[in-house]
Length: 311
Length: 293
Image (cartoon, rainbow over all chains, first blue to last red; front, side, top):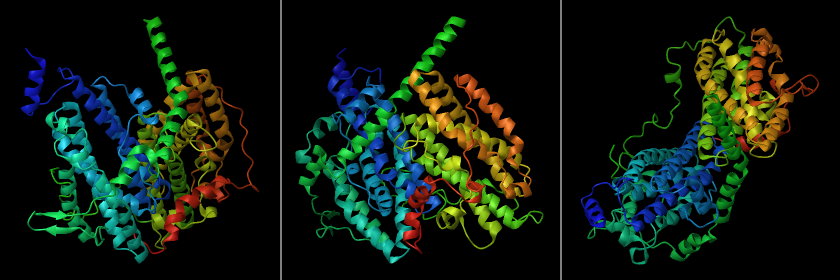
């Protein structure tokens, strides 16, 4: 039997590919790259929000934020585990991250400058992430799809928490309302960039669509995100900073302006406002923990030897 | 719940319950919240602050590890412990406010008291890593000592004069048992692991050891409420001795840090680290008076 033809049939029939199934090398590599980047994004994403845990303005908000950042560590763990089902190694992937060989979502290269950013990240950034990730619950690779189902549930919880924070702040003082608007102004365009470059410039989309790893194009998802966000912004009482944004009854969608793609490529290329800081932080945590991991391994090895000699 | 639309149900369900709410009535359902007539109100208020501040301040310190732990699993675990302690602190400070009867809630007590009004022990506030002042071994040494001490304290508090504090202690015990187990496992791993980890574990225990004596020194409030911690010192010593033995560590000689005119954390006299901790924790809340969070 032709393995490749069988694989193509499985994928085309919307059946799941499982770890022991034969798969083309390109499919495996694409998946490892995509899942690892997603895992890295969760781990790097702990930093911009973690930045506010110590200063959270109420104990309830502190608990919500700490639990959220903890969830992100958990998501990173599931996703690294999914890459391991494809033969990848978590240690090597971490090396790829801290050496800059693999990327993570560029949104986390923007700084968090006020507590409203915690809410805005929940509402817009997690919202955009959910738009990107919901279709992945039906992605062709089984372990990834199953991890995404759990992750999407938790992400949508985070999104509601973020929106609720912004709603509460909008019902507070003028200074708080201004803080929310300023935060939305800063994060709107980077949120639209989260869907990736326009379809015409997206290198990986076509093959990934064919393999059912990716289910929608960047531009389709971006449109969906804008359409869903506009009524939310109205309800919240904030303005989205795009003069071209308006409903187009003929298309049944909102028209909107384009993000600054030069800035996007600059940030993707490593020159964003916080790229160096984010990677250095992760590298330091990893290197500072080296002696702990070595000690745990040495202790486990000693115990195994003791048990073996007793047996 | 369907996930085809990320914003589905975002507008319609504005109940506060899903976002942790206050949760207090659930976890302590059925407990009589009337302040017991047999206890002195001022003493009971002060004691709730002592217990609440211990938990809040150590939670603040442990959360500093977030995104800095040696393994992702440990990031999850440390955040979990910090969350447990934060939950205990919220219940205890809320109770303190009720007992005081002047309308102060958990946030008024956490954010609007000055350093001298905080009554936590020094062990909770000192820097033990990841920032200056220690490392992962020091953090685990502190957590082991703190949780072993708290367990003994909470076990007795289950029969405390205030039923609310008794219920909080009862609930907290299960959490603290996990914290102590987690810390003990790491102390053993690090004590036994490599030469470097052993040396760091020895240094970590030495770093926290001067702060142990304060844990068992009764404040006059504790004496009047009949909760003298000296009563369970030997019990805690036994637990620590068992862990140190398994870890191949020697217990340092007791060298209690001198007090300041006889006073320490319980009397509101803190280490220099405390001012910075509070400056960071309270800054945002204080800079926007009247804000809603």
